[in-house]
Length: 372
Image: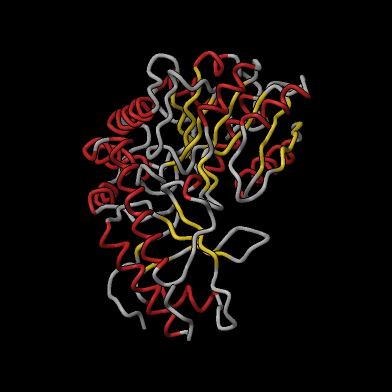
């Protein structure tokens, strides 16, 4: 029987715990073709473009489904026939891009990296110099499998200098880490409703350079994932092509309102960074060390080494922490046993203190040491 009587808090990289206001926004029904809902869609898209300072140069194309739907849509829509993609790979979500490209039958070049190392712009530059056929680079801004934050602006500068195009999976950074379309050239930045914007899952979106999108008619391998067709239909009718996730869009509209009230990217990123620092400090007192060096660590999620103890069992640990009110994430590394704790969502420092206490109590219940 649970030790608490509320929903457990999600210490995961999405879905995440949302505010009461965001939950309440989903208590109303919307007509998918109604002018009122169409106005909500337009406002959400306007604000999403504004987050990356893309007004006038970029457009937002919303899409039903998870973030991976939107990543596949961006790749399938923006890659020209014969296009070839360089994918720096140091984690699960980089590997997912490679799998998407392989499934679509698109050419890809993998730049293999260590799981605990950031992407190196110089290595990307060398790969582009070595293969003139590469037309695009696809990068994950924050590799959520580990929590590494990659140097996007430096990568974008290298890609632009080589005359290639950049597609960015910003799923776990959008809204918490600054991305500026005025100074960071990209063809698309892809994210989703249920991450750092603190909405609920169900809507992906791509912020696409208008000129690039205009050239993409008929390119997509898929009807449902055709961003050009979706954008054109929205422009022509103000409506989604197919039934939209109305409650998800309404929740995101309310979440964006709170995002602006909090102070936008800078304030949200600062809160998450404070959560991260408090978490790392608290877990250190229990003898739990993060995988990454501090300079590589994003404010989104922290990967911890699992205790090197014969009594360690992630399943039992997970269940114990859940009974105490928190849902954690397993690790995604292949070489080292780890677990992950998210820092994003409607969480404050007292929530972080509470999860550290829940971890301590669970470790003791499992017969594991709780001291550094």
